Every structure is written in structure tokens, then in C-alpha cells.
Image 1: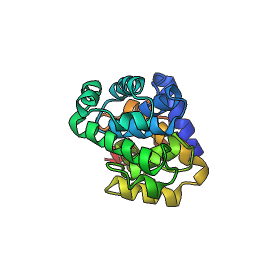
Image 2 (image 1 turned 45 degrees about the horizontal axis):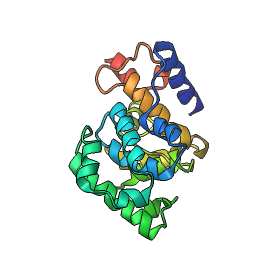
Image 3 (image 1 turned 135 degrees about the horizontal axis):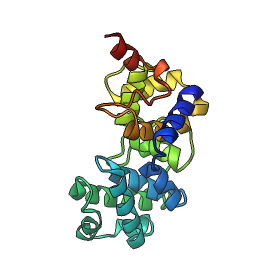
Image 4 (image 1 turned 60 degrees about the horizontal axis):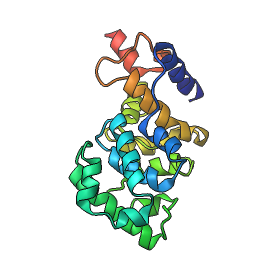
Length: 217
């Protein structure tokens, strides 16, 4: 696994050093604040990274914590987050989540997956992102990039991100879990794209089933 991760980083640096993912930006800009990372991850669904980063910055300039966001008016939150996808639904959702964090957890985001997935709109991917980016707990958040690249490489042979997560957990040593999401997402955005992946530039193609099959045909 180390050769794959190092090869991805080497490839990206050789082609063009990539910008940070939205979640890594969020962790750095919000000093790893778990609540900001939780809300930012919910907002990031089906939204471009650059939009997510801007919106989260604006939102937390106005609402500093769960208590403040829990009492926000929906229309005011919608105004702040209107540039992201599904902002009507997301405005209601993040206020609802803020109320639960404030009342049930005394303003502190839980640091375990069982509690996180009980929050409205929080699935395993979002919960795992919070564990990785807020608490630095080993987990493997699987989005479309992690799912696609894992299947292309032949690390898994799965149909859904949920199945990919379970297979990666079995196969990847825990010491690499914290690196997988960030590295794979950057690689998927910049090199191993859904259409026209940059196989000629890729320094890990010798490990890649997709490349082998493409060149065998």
C-alpha cells in the first residue's frame, strides 16, 4: 500500500501539485474543530470543493458553534449556503444536527461511528470523514473517487462504496487508513479521472488492473 500511496503523490507532484481537498482545507482553516468538520462534510455532498470551503468559512463567521447554529433561522442559513447543491435541504439538516449536538451531546461531536450515523443525513462516509479529519481515528471514508480507484487498481471488486469500505478494511493495514481518503480523492480529481484518466503519467499503472486490461485489448 505504501508504494501505491507514494506513487500517487509522486505522480501528482510531477504533473501539477494538486490543491488540498475540501476536508483537509477545512481541518486546517478550522483548526480541526469537529463540529465545523461535521457540518462541512454534510455540506460538501454533491458540491465542488472550492464552493464548500467558501461556504463553510462564511457559515462559521456567522455561527461559531452548535448552540448558535441550532437557533439560526433557516432562511438566513439558506442565504449563506445558497451556492452549494441542495441548499434548502442542507440548511434544515445542519440546523437539526446542531440542535442534537447542542442538546444531546453538550455541544461536542461524538467520536464514534455508531453515534455519528444516528445524526440526520450522516451516513458512513460522512461519519468516517469526521473520524479521520476531526479526530484522526483510523477509518476509510469511501466516496466516488476512492470507490473508482480501488476498483481500477484491483484492490476490490465491488459495486457500491459501502462494499468497497468493507473490503478495504479487510485488506488494507490500519496504519494506512488515515491517508487513503485524502490521497485517493486528490488522485481521482487530478489524475485517475472518471473519463480519460491520465494513465500515461501514472506512476502506479504497473499495479493497475484497469491499465492492464486496457492495453491488453
